[in-house]
Image (cartoon, rainbow, N blue to C red):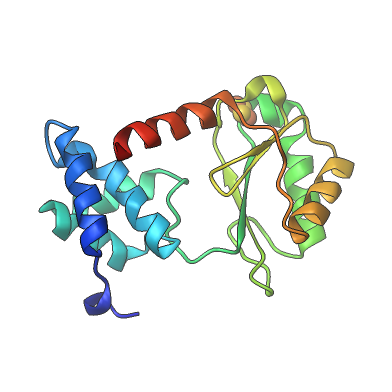
Length: 185
Ligand code: FES
């Protein structure tokens, strides 16, 4: 899809108006509107960032700066499942790199890459606020898989291939879901 073909639908524009109304400036609504764009396109590549900037009447450099700062925004097309492996301090001390490297070996890709079948993308990320459950990873900005071992990682991959996600939802995730609902009202 070319940049010229990208556009929000009227429903999405209405949602964006509702989001804007909850913030003092358009700039402050950037995170939420990037999220709307990512839910629509599955990523926020530069051309999608431009759409967000133009819709909010903001400099494209601002939106690019915000999108590039957060690993939660996908700057490339991703696999069906994005596995965010935390290697920040607590997870690192508890074997986060062993988990990351095991995952890389099992899937035959490196962090930042997507499997050929388009099923998995691995990302190495900073702290996801679940240090007490280290080492952990997040599945596609959603559920967390905690207290990981290599065996648990193998099981997780096997389950994801069958479309079965881990059931544990972190408090952070529940708060995000709650905020998302509030903003859509
Ligand atoms: S260090 Fe991994 S969740 Fe905080």
